[in-house]
Length: 489
Image: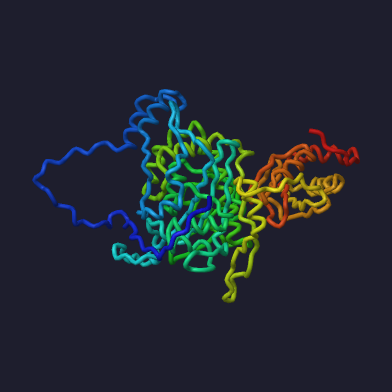
């Protein structure tokens, strides 16, 4: 069912003061009272138990003890009125406890917002004047990151839709605007209503809001994440004390550098380039950090970032989602971007919007979210598929051989794009528009390569081949044979 509408006024939730700036009014009371011994918090019990037993989380005993201790209380940090709670299907269970870990009981749609709030964005005298715009532990600002995630235990698939922050959308009570304003106008509720309307009235079960500090602490708690930085990234903003200085190449990013990687947008792709980097980082975190073996560390990680997260998910539900995501095959982890196109360049007073393509959105939601009726269509004919080649090998002869081979088997809409800077051992076949059937058909025609559904390819085409070294041997074989016959598996 579609998300319900409600009338909302602009919210002004008071933000949390930085550490050391909280009010001291409560200090000094009850000096003659015998101090009470503080009970151990839930997280402390979990950590003590794990350190004493050393039992694997995969065992039935460990799972049972963890399940008993899990809280079913939502980790909300912002109050919501009863009528606002109905925007999400809060009363419908999404996870169940067993003798092992909590498990998902049905497909779940989660809205995830990443926010960045500065002292200049809030009216709060608790914040001292530092002489620059410092970050605030708040969730009420513009949302730099907007994702809708679907966890589907029935198909054993995980889908992520990235919504560019500059997407033009109708925000109830405010008219047409950039969609990233919805959270600042009306919090998670208005953001959910706006995103749901944009995505063919998709039902959103839960929400997560996390701020910049939370993402930084999360990456640090996970031990960092290894990614390939595609180019040198340098940017200076003295007004925020924000500095980006990353060199091209594969490297382990800590929390601070990961945020530099995510927030950089000063290239030819602007916000779309940032969406692509978001997807790159998400995939790296899921593949490297969120594994069944690392689930034992999840309580510790949550305890570190909890103050920077606002969500109506409970700990039990978070464990169930993380457990499911850790078991999804890479080929079943699909990341797409909201179909659309740029309008305006943002220069000379022109507002730059990402204009959504409504028909393509409906098709996307039908294919990946089981929403509406998807027309039954076959695999696209090779002659209709737009293909881009990004070479990572530096072997121009191999690239020409691939173009000739593709033409020989019917792919005659092939273009050369800018080289892919990361040296790849294995070729990637990227379905940036979400058409995994066309990508799988091309993989079958080529006989090699890894199919990925994500938006890191050339967005103006249907399929991007990021050419790796595995093509070299086959190219030599074709050249020697002077043949355009099908490459065997």
